[in-house]
Length: 455
Image 1: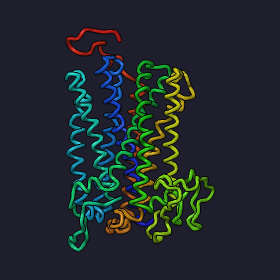
Image 2: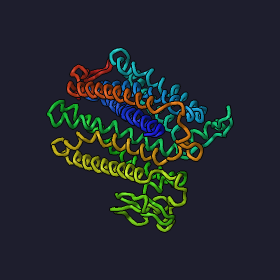
Image 3: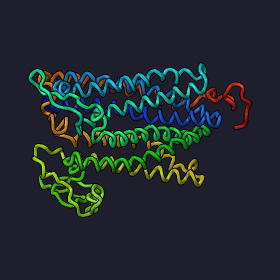
Image 4: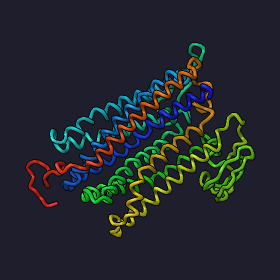
């Protein structure tokens, strides 16, 4: 395996593993705001118990996410030094903003959220929870902005520095609001909301199947399902908007999404296998001209095909096709599961349908797989460019780093990440098996100088 492939595989591995955790922290942050807000609004002690239990899970996810994110910073400077030199001014601004406005905000209030339950008033504690959730979302903003700039560069000019070109910012807000950033941000955040929501749903359904913590599980499941339904439907809408943006800004990527070679009205495939040599989708089932209608609002308007691009400027078509369609299938499956679950809830059958609860236990895997596949289709679909139209991936890695060094570090990362994942699973399982503490149920009237009231 050549050095470039090894370097790309190592970065994909480290990023993919890290990306298991930030979506969970973003989604759980939103849910904690809803749970604790419900406690403040209703004074129902069950919501207090929900917020305290899930805040402990949030703290675990946050800690592992921070630990796994550090490695990528070093990879930029070792394996991808040419890339770092080229985008340093752009990424420096976005990552500095992420550190100031997101990480410090999130970590600064985290201790108060975790340890301040019995030390500060309920309103101040709720404020800290809101700030932690806001910080988690701000992290997504700046990371997605930086990545989106690679997809659709804007607000910069090229200058020569020490014999090499580099991008320098000329308009910070043009960088932030580059042509793809907002569509991709909303789509990414919706995926994160689903990751958190389906984790809550999964654990709650497991408690119901086991007959444990029933009041807690029912309340937790309801909140999780509402967030899952809303975010999954919003995900469908934002996914459409994002695809329309891709058709304008990265037509080769859109063509790869659907294995579309000739510029003509394009079908939308449900599944298939792209044979690049024959320029066709084999074993495929498609709706004729539907892609043209979805991206242009016109059944007959042609969609730019891959043959419009030189062979060296095309992404690996089948890999993009498969990851994209698998993501879409999982997204539609999660919508169906959420709709069926809410209907059963409305009919008063949700908590007694064991087959449905069993599906909900495993639902936690769906958004994680969809997030990984979506990220893969977006990044592979950008190839051969690491910065669209400006810097090729083959020109961006460090020539002084050898294959043996990358293999050795990859082996070490694999061991460390396996241990981290084992620790995460062990601690998460311990928290789930232990369940919520009865001590987390406060008196029915949790505020000082207020009369008690029935739940």
